[in-house]
Each structure stands twice: as C-alpha cells, then as structure tokens.
Image 1: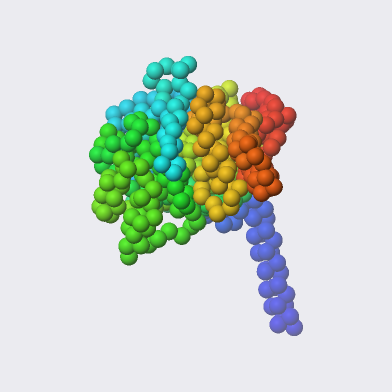
Image 2 (image 1 turned 60 degrees about the vertical axis):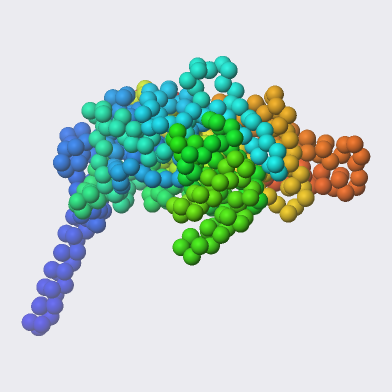
Length: 523
C-alpha cells in the first residue's frame, strides 16, 4: 500500500513538472524565443518592442561585407542619415585578380552616389574602349562618350586600392560603424531576420540587431542559401598575371584576344602594370607548383598574344606570380525575406569577361537608395519586405542586359570545333569591325551606357543574320544553307536560356509586374 502511494506521488510530481515546463516554453515562444534561441540570441526589448543589442549599439541597417557593394552601400545609406553597422571579415587591403575594370556606366553610378573621388589617388587609368584581336586582325571599339563630360570614361585599377578608398569614405561618416568580424549566421525570429551573430577579430562571439540586414559578403557567401536559391555555375577559370612596363597596342583600352580555347584579356591597372587574364574553360586548371601552368602559358597561350605584348607576357610567366580564380555565374533568384536583403556577388554573378559586375552592383545600390529614401522607419519588416520586392523588378533592365551580354559573349568568343559556332564567332568579329552603329550599339550595351535588353537581343540576332549572309553570298550551297540554319539555332540556344534564367517578363516588360508599382509603407 505504501509503495502504491509512493508511486502515485512520483507520477503526480512528474506530471506537475511537465505542465510547468510546458507553460514556461509556451510563454517563451509567445515572446518569439525558442528554447535554444534564448541561449543563442542575447537581447533586450526596448519599450516600443524594437530589437536592441545588449550593449545598446543599435543600427538601422547591418551590412555584412565591405567590398565594393558593401562599402558603397554603407556610404550611401549613411549619407542619407541611416545608422549603419558594417561587419567585414578582413579589413586589410584585398588582393584580387578581378574587379579591376569599372565600365563608364558604372562610373556614372559612382558619380551619382558621390563616390567618384574613390578612383583618385590610386593610380587608376582611364579606359576609352576595347581592341579586339582575331587571327592577326584587329579592330578598335570606342565607348560612345561624345555626349558626356570629358571626365566620364571607364576606369581600371588595383581592386584592393579601390575598395580601401571606398571603406575610408564610408567610415568617415559619423553614423557608419565599420568593424572587423566574421558573421556566422543570421538571427531569425518568427520568419523575420532580426540581425546577425558574428565573431570579432579577438575571438569574441557577439550579436548585432537592426531592422534591416543586407548581405554583401561576395561570391563565396556562406549566408546566401537562406535568402535565395543559388544555382552557381563555374564555366571557366581565370589565370592572372601582371605585366610590368608593357606597352599595349592601344593605350587606355582593354584588349580582348579571341584565342583558342577561349578569350585572353589585357588592360592597364596602373601607369606601369597591365593585368592579363587567361581564360581556361572548365573548373580544372593546370597545376602551378609542378610547372604545368607555366608550360601551358608558354606553349598554348604565348603565341596567340599580339607581338607587342609577347616579351612582357613571357617575362611575367617566368616571374612566376601566377594566380587563378574560378569564374562564377549565378542568376538572381531571391527568397523575399522580412528583415533581410541580398546585394552584390552574394546575390547575382555573371562571367567577368565584360567587366560588368561593379556596374550592376552600383546600379543596384542606386535603385535601393531611391526605394529607401521615403522611409523614416524600417521596423515594419513584413510591409518593408513586400515593398522591397519592387527592387528585384526595378533592377532588371540594367542587371539583365549586362548579365545576358556577359554570358552570351563568352560563349560566342570561345573557340569551338563546331562549324556553325566558328561562323558565329567570325561574324561577331566582322560585325563589330563594321564600325558605326554596328560597333557603338554593342559597345554601349557592354559599357552600361545603354542597358536596354531589347537592343541587346536585336544586335545579337543581327550578328547571326550577318553570319548567315556571309555564308549565302555570293553562291549558296546546301552545305552553307545547313550551316546557316545551325548558326541561327545555335545563337538561339545561347541567348534564350540566359534570358529565361533572368526572367522574360521582368527583363522586357517590368511595368507589367505588380511589384513595379509598390508604394512605400505608410509608417
């Protein structure tokens, strides 16, 4: 009997503890804190219910990453009066072999953002166009700058110097806080991003809160998976060299050599240095340590560069400072998430052949700035998220034009054993060599000065039709007619999948997308 009472008492006590624990957990969940998140996120609630950091260092916007996009965005929002907290993994000067050419369209956006002085005092070089080389022939393609101020042109420079200038410019604003730290995760509460968890330079783990978190942590982003559907393609790799005291055939121009198997680029990055980027298709490149890369560059690549550059190229290879970088392509495919936004290479990438990445990023910042300017309060995360869906539509004409051109040009410029592809490649070179509207039209698209998707499609198929004309005149034959048919279907197979991934409606008919007309939240 005593044993029965004992077991009954134990059972009642256990049930009471379970009920009490359940009520405590429900209460914590009612406050938006899961059992584990209560330990993971340390915060206090202000009187009005806004999230506040425990140390009181609040911000309106947290920016993850201080590269080109992050630094420019921090300065732009800070200049508009926002309190901005920027967290960057490494604040030392970056050393990269890409992100060194800013197209004229990007420079115009830099002016619009008040950041044009960031290309000063870094030995940046003006760029006025491109020179295109194929099979011993060459043609010059100048940017259509006649209607712009004399200072407007492309700029080429050391990427790290440019980024450091941008960071200094952002940090000079009293309401912008630039901190070195590694963001390890986004803090989510009831489907809304409230801030970030990060590790400081000295190893401390901290949390930071803000109504809006913007992720700009670059092509290697470890945060993008929770904010978008990343479909990253790596079509090729760049092998980077620096040629010293090299005199390019056309000064102040980028040089594109239509080599085999794929293009080679040359452009100045200072008054004494020229960047060389050798494209190698696929994800595997010859080994640098065992000398395979040196042998490849000397035997396969060297004889394809212009004679004026040959000696400098071989000297750079012998010097041995050879670096590689995978070329990534990723269409923008965001998950609209309350409290968070993706920007820069974390959000959207294209093949760097055309040097359009920074132009897209700066254009996106202008669009976002204009959307946020009417808003005084960013705390209404659901309505803000719905409103900012218009960002994804408004950015499309510029971003999609540059993205599509980069992907299409890379495929057209790359060598192929297919006769139809060879004809398309030759047609493209000959079409651009015609001059007039045949060169200024495509180069204005590439430069970001005329980012019109319809104009891009028209010129692309004009090249294909021009190629068919070359085949059929003066004497068409069944074989030539067949190659011409394959040329037009091949051209369609290049550009239409890219357009599909960009979104046909958003790219060509953005005004038909409901988000295009979203009005700012009332509060």
